[in-house]
Length: 436
Image (tube, rainbow, N blue to C red; front, top):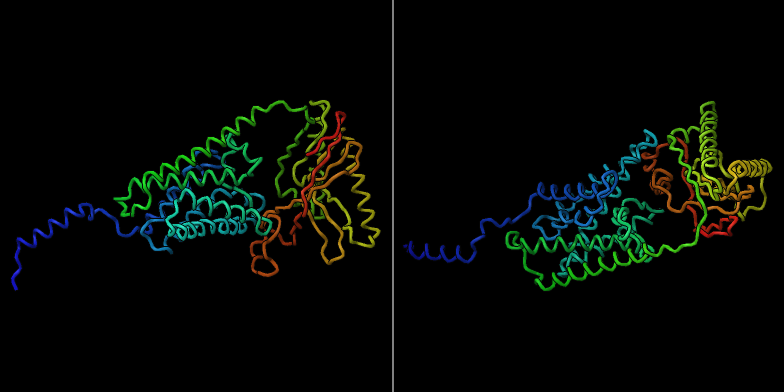
């Protein structure tokens, strides 16, 4: 059989004219490229928070990672790349966890890994929704914000580094949180990331061999909606900031001690080192109180840092029928202690203190509390921390998963009980009571 060379050349010419860019179209994204994109997202997200505090970066930080939604790459490679990128962001951003104690390194590593899991989970969910040909402007915020909420509440939650937190420097932007909470800001930022990604994918759809699933008119509609939401948010922010006709409130003094966490831990040792730690904490807060009292007259409230009171507050669960004599004596001793603090402060005092509550069970409740002491020394309100920090204040699923004890930073059971109610304090002042 003979082949006509002229016919063959003509057929090749026709094919080339139909697909002129076929040689440059990538058929499969490499794992290295995917990893580079996820590292770019990690770097931009890191820059959005402390220490750079460049919150504007958050508005497009997820764009590199979101390119993987429609990229020609195996799902497991996309998941692995996003997990590694998420871990790179969390391990650097949350390095402060290890500072409290050298044994917190394991907790830092474990908690960073847990938070990193939300990156591949979000990508997987968005890719599933993308099969319905829905725009990333909608699907990404619908996935990311519920995951933020879940992370903030599951097992008491870890509500750090939400997208909305990156906007703390932009006052007009964050005023809407009185209506939506931080999640409203996160939703808007996620929608912006989705929109910018859609614009990038549309602009380079030919080179990336992507189907044109969106018409330009639909992109314009998405951009219009996001711009309108942004304008409404900023407009509401400026409206709220102009509402400056507030009644004069209480005069508050914030006392900042800046003590090493190891000193706080040492107070429970029961030896000379523990006694020295207690003495130093007492002196630190005594000096700060005296300084605030001398420099600022008429202070209505002095606020102590978290857990800076060296002794635990003692109380009894309402269901307890009888209280041991030793416990009653301890309660009276603590009442005398806070009374002395209030009288010396010459103001109401909000104490950062640990609370031990006697129960009928084998283990008493331990809380991280804020205790409000009236100026005359009478306790009038207490808030017990609801969202305890995983590993730092309790070990997640320690009973059902004993191996979690590997990440315990201390040799004793330091787990706290989470509070079960939000407290509204009533602050008495010469000008009347204030609710907060």
